[in-house]
Length: 209
Picture (cartoon, rainbow, N blue to C red):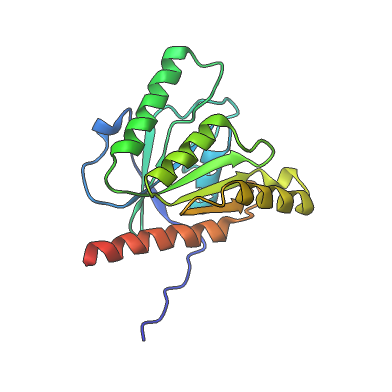
């Protein structure tokens, strides 16, 4: 009987490259998990929390700073992709269109994408584009983990109610996991790391068959 590999406390990662579009992404079969979310939802902070590297992804108080597809190789195998944030009202229309086009193109055409992490604000669930991504993942049969981030802004009771309400609203999704998360405090970190490891291990197992 093979012993189960201990769950890492962090996912060691190194920056690979930034790409303005799918065409500039590496053409290979390395399994990828993409991180999506509205501008200022905390994607970069989530990535820094799970990798244990505060400089892994640039964090800015100014929304809309992530304008490229940023790719990070994991030491254990697999890759994380930080997608451009969407919905930043102060960005020009042309910039918003370019970002959204890059995200849509990546999600629709990236063959080695094995999972999606959607970072949302627990205080403002159900945003239109968030729901569009969730619906797309269901139609595409792609596993998605929705992080109700900034949970530290609410008490434990309110967190539980928000999570329960979200799960009820998406109970028909075939492959959705929702987690209360705090990029600031680390809440939900190990649950997310375990899920990501499961996705990458499943992808590796499928490749070996």
